[in-house]
Length: 259
Image (cartoon, rainbow, N blue to C red; front, side):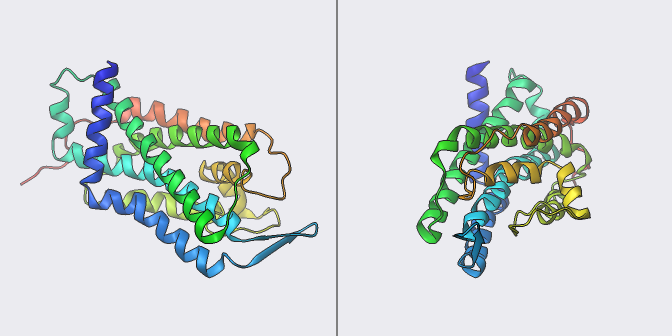
């Protein structure tokens, strides 16, 4: 099973490289936002307890959150709907490759992309905006990335059940995540803790807890990063929901007739 899973992951990565839409939304899109927000707002300063830090320090983890969601949720949802509607998933059911090995392979491929984007965003943040990372929190940071990636991978596979065809997949997936980006402080950061209605809405969904857990590793105002158990719990709960929904509702056959 391991060999078949690895083969499925390699095929998924190859398909990703050959899909311009997936490459744009997963790689170009986050980098574009990082460059725009970084150069427009990044040089502004935030002061706290006599310390000053550039806004770019908090833009980078926000864009990293966007990158994780794009590499897992958006990428998997769009890719699986495309394969389903073109009959590729249906043909896979007639091969020795088990559904479990296929699913794990897709998730592994997404994790590879997440690692690549994490390195890319971190390098751009460091080189162009001077953003530093708290190395003492590397363990918490890695677990946050891992938990978030697994959760959004499961959600990406599950949401394919409500996407009717490959043409509507980009609109469906981005309509789901973009409003949450804005209520999750992905694009903007305030040194004052938000307590309004939209902030509470963001607390319910997994993007904001993931963003906050990643941000702590970049925050120079935090001397010792604590383990964000409550944030991980929210993200993991959504991941479990995604696993259960995907197991029950994931479709292997085309949902629309092709002419």
